[in-house]
View 1: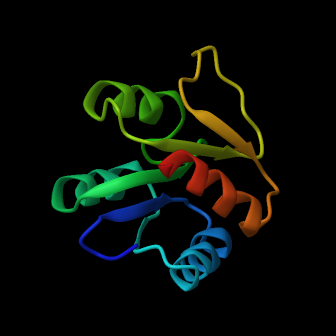
View 2: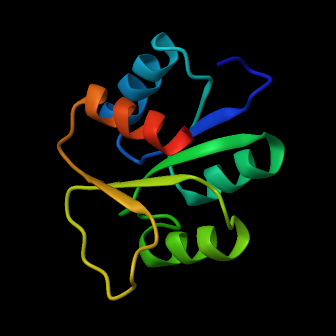
Length: 116
């Protein structure tokens, strides 16, 4: 995969997950952009070709149900993998969920399946 294909966008508010995950996915060949919240993610969605989003569900700034609703409404057809250590919602989630803690290899496998 090269930069002409597009980017995987990681949306994660925890530095201890976001930074090592970016490094890992870059090492295994994915071009990666990162955002610490939904607002930062929207900027990347406007400025870059995003081929998949890996996003934490619970974030203080534009996270949770509002973030999921945004993705459904404004990014239909986008490949999304949600991650969460604690998921509580009344909204039926249209995206696959990967529960925390997860291994980077497990996440990479899910991402490759999502992009296949």
